[in-house]
Length: 482
Image (cartoon, rainbow, N blue to C red; front, side, top):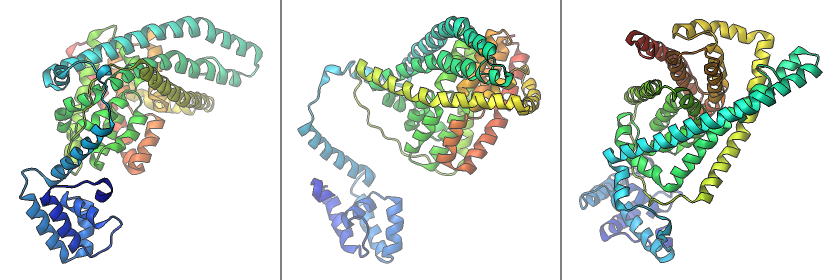
């Protein structure tokens, strides 16, 4: 590899490589020079392999590595990595022409986004204007109200109900297509009128943030906080993606270095991170009462840090080292932003329509056979114990099929005036913590294995209702949102 790319290290590293190559007797898949470099960088897998193969010569190799380490005040993997990076920069400078026309800001803005104080203020501004104002109030409020009330509520659903009920004589088929839980009147209304505007607004904001180069700075900013819960700044990528879709974020968690980190982030995504549609609906529901919104945010942040901290103490292993290349800040390109937004919306819509139809059919079957009545009867005492009416059992049951499906049900209940703000906060918090949707659970099984996924699901089911019970008790006792 080195000969091919003409990478030449300093004299000490090159001498150490040559000495190790002379000692290696066994034939490996990689070249002996590559094996020597990996040994100098103390790659655990290669060290174990060489130790098993070379036996007595292994002691001599360790002596060479220790002798080389004494010449530097930094680890050899850092020294070798720096030399490679310098070489890459030499090549890059020869073939890349830097265009600064698309960059904005200056070094002060770079510094400000990663400074703990100014960076936190910038993050709050991004969350306030990006998520709260645009996604929550505009997307989940104005746009959803218009489509849901003026189109589906006033024209589409009444027309479908009338058409189906007047021309189809069988009640069971009428209920499958229309009425309260029909495919056209429930699944399509949830998907088009409630979920699509919210995820569209979120994906637009996310694409702008992504294209500006802000995400790596956010990773640097939260690195210290994430270390408290056993992660590092790199975990902010799947975490932020989780606000779009937890299923996708669970899959992206494979980019984290250690199994311990991947298990931790999977648990936190399943437990504490609402998807874009769920987040948008909750924002829209609670934004009318800022105190309710603050209680929900504070409670979710507490659970995130509490469970993250405890999990990091229970799970074996150490945290991985964190390093990340920070690109320059740049003005987002409209074509990039629109292209990314369209692609994600298209992917999301294609995914959710079959699942929403499937969920509607299951709900229809559940009611037709009486199975759902049994499940709802079993759920009612638990829901009542956290201060919520029986009708919320349906929302939790829907939430298992899709988190956004359940959140949309919560939206309906609030519009009907069935919940006060205390109940709304308790319901929103419990539903956020509630078991992951079917798609995310399937991804958890694929990525973490069935045993780990089912253990997480069982823990989350129990924990969500215990947390809802404690929150309701605190709010009732303190008279908050009475």
